[in-house]
View 1 (tube, rainbow, N blue to C red):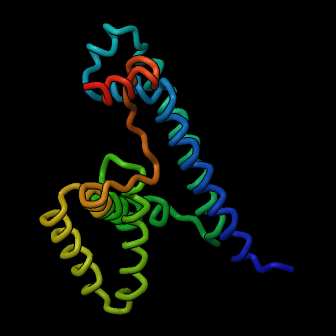
View 2: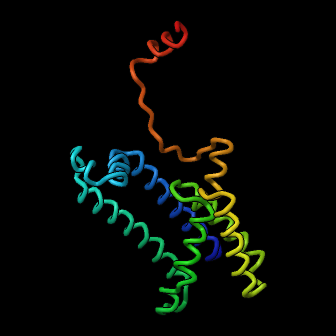
Length: 185
């Protein structure tokens, strides 16, 4: 019979895959285009026929559902739930900001890379007490100075790698016409 930790691992992995798939599908859909338009200019998006309120409400509902699933899973693992555990500034604010800044903002891969770096640092430095938190701060400052777009942003700029490509490109005409134009000119 499998141990409880083994089952929790697979449930957590399934949640990660489900949430990542939901994010990618949402951002690759027409709602993703609407979100980009709203991000750039709400007024221009509304003038182009995007229902800004409906799009925002849909995103808030999807985000709340995903957050609730992950939060429920986290608190199912704990034996005792208290307000201090649920609203800890270190666990839920500082570390999440650290993970996002280190990995990179604006890309799906950034927080994944930031999470890997955070847990590697936590695993190796957690026994050092307050020096651990100071080291996290120094790492965050160094990454912000060296790579303002985060570690994944630096990788994308250097190598052009994308695990979850979300950019769209416009192709004018059919493929034969494009290739004939390039070879003929």
